[in-house]
Length: 235
Image 1 (tube, helix red, strand yellow):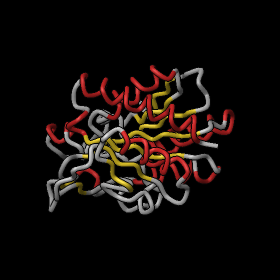
Image 2: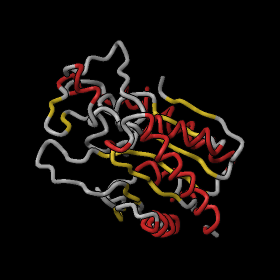
Image 3: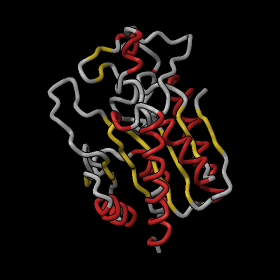
Image 4: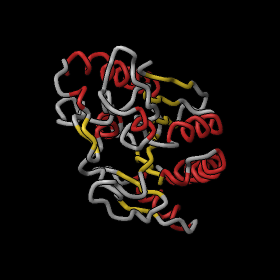
């Protein structure tokens, strides 16, 4: 399944989760140990459950990617060199070295983004929130990432400034374009939000905080509050 869609009546906010799944179709052999599919290189740990819980709480629509980013990274531009990664955080993805990249792109990337694009054209939400998670430390040359949450954005800072102030006011260590910059990597929101003038942010939660149901429940409540703040403060 390339795309999971959760419908909701609250059409002012759209939730996206590019890296919700670690699924690898049966006809694709990545040439990796099965254990790697449970690591951050294959899936944003906790992001899928958090997105589903938040969508249910808000009664909001959500699109979730249905394939591992080791198969194809839905959060990359079509010409990005790591659209189909040949390595990730020091792990070789041998099965991706000699493949038909265009076939992979048409099979997974196109239907996911076409579905999002069609929904936005029909409903134009007031804001788009993209849910991700990050690992506390990369395996290769990683440094500690102390933030509990990061807010990522590119040129449009409307939602980001509101979100960062609110999260910091809750006492949460909050990264401003950390642990990486949305000005360098913002493919999904560049296409579906900024291109249409829709306020948006990528919300990166540290994955050790949302690995279990209790963590997901806690962060669902936090993001319910954040969404309320955005609804109140965005023009």
